[in-house]
Amino acid sequence: MGIAVMNNPSSRLNVLVSGGGIAGNAVALQLLRAGIQVTVVERSPAPRPGGQAVDLRGPSREAAERMGLMPTIARYQLEELGISYVDPNGRTYANLTMEDFDGKGPVAEIEITRGDLNQVLLDALAETDDRLTYRYGEWVEALDQDETSVEAVFASGHRERFDLVIGADGVHSATRRLAFGPESDFSTFLGGYASFFTMPTPAGTRPGWFALQLIPHAAVGLRPDGDPATAKAILTLLADPDPALRGDVAAQQRLIADKVGENPGWHAPAILEAMAVADDFYFDELARIDMPTLVAGRVTLAGDAGYCGSPMTGMGTAMAIVGAYVLAGEIASDPGDIPAALRRYEDTITPFLDKAKTLPGGGIGSMLSGNRFGTAVRRTANRIMMARVMRPVVAKLFFGTTDDYELPDYPALSAAPN
Image (tube, rainbow, N blue to C red; front, side, top):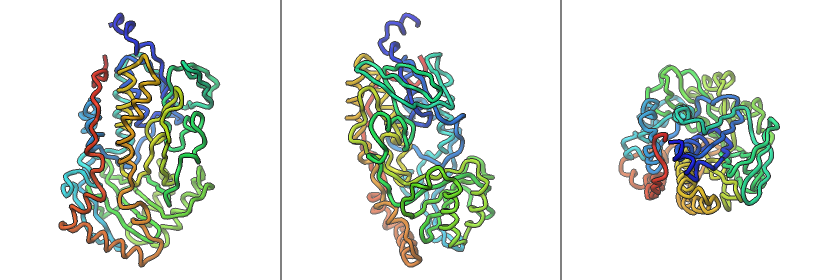
């Protein structure tokens, strides 16, 4: 085995992955299995648990199967039966079951929390050999590249040269800023904000159902968690852009309280109370990232850093998994020519991204209204759209946009460590 690795061109590659989320860990796993040395740096001091539920369907599920992840994913899989739309009094006025769209609707057959999916990847990484270096509490502060390599300067002061740098550090990617330019060049604000956090499951909640209430300026949801005693609060807010909100948790929570507190029906009081003490509170703008290219010399991007459609697409995890699979596959297939591999990665993944970033139904403006009349109209529209006769129309408008993407086959990749 030692001689085979020494003679393998991929074994001489040294790759930096900036970001220890789903995209970063997925691409690191596949590169390691192909015999490539990988360093992962993650700004957080430890893995981040929790997070909203994400799904695997179509090409992303196929990629997860090829990576050998599905048996472990099945152990974490959520039991989610469908979506129920509720009025301010908590009465259900429309239901959409998982079976209504054969697991290809807003609730997929395979649902898992983001933190659990990342843990599946971390467990798989732990089974790889010593070609992996993983550093928490570390991030890239400068990049200097030439035609053959990239020097990364880290927050710790450490410097190291790599054959390739992969930016997988999220929608506010520092790697993207360093190699491609400021975030404002690539980010489009989509009309609001999203927040989620874990809370105790309120009494009367239907087990296994994602309950969603529309109110003026907001959608308030409760989604099943892996533990029946807890649920995920999912909030979408219609709001103007406010740069001062970034990083200011108190201001973020005031905005939520202002929007949701105006309509304190259903479980709104319990959600706001839980928000104040949640240890996994997340808040960010709804933004789309569009890159004219995913390649800047020997730096490339994966996941939200390179192609975020916003949580409204429901395709963020799919893009992360499929993008990581294709990127690792192209590198492993031609480790001696990184620039050519990166060009093929961009050409191969772009058709998938163009469809995956499409906002279903036209975006937040079609989902939310800033007044009671518009909100009532949207509730009525949901009731009509959930009728059986409308399902073919709804399926065409909202779901299955990437099912026709043919995932490439990469013999150089393996579902198990070498």
